[in-house]
Length: 170
Image (cartoon, rainbow, N blue to C red; front, side, top):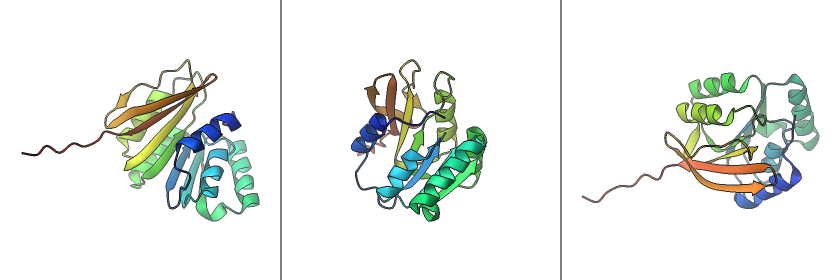
């Protein structure tokens, strides 16, 4: 478990809108749940937190219980790719997806491909990847394109959105 550092989390929430009222968040490799907890404290209506570790699941559930956020969060202990397939089959979609895979395992691209393939990011949504500066996030995955990147020490935040749909006037 490598929680998102306070510096990176602060930067992330300075970039995202301050008021997250009503949004639905997917937190992949959720660790301690600190990113989802911050989003809920800023008004997120619902968060689904995925982590494959039983230990992380227990920590997240306890953190949510202590803060009174259990009614707005669902914790799933499962491998991320299995969870992504399940969410896609259920027709789930999200306003914000936060992806923080273990560094140096080359999971960023595979996760982005699975998210795009499952159509899990809403048309107006934002997907944020926290990754090592040594791991390239890539720039395009089907309809998802890299729109911004910020570096914080050895950590990058890479932001993806759907390609703008241009309608030609004919």
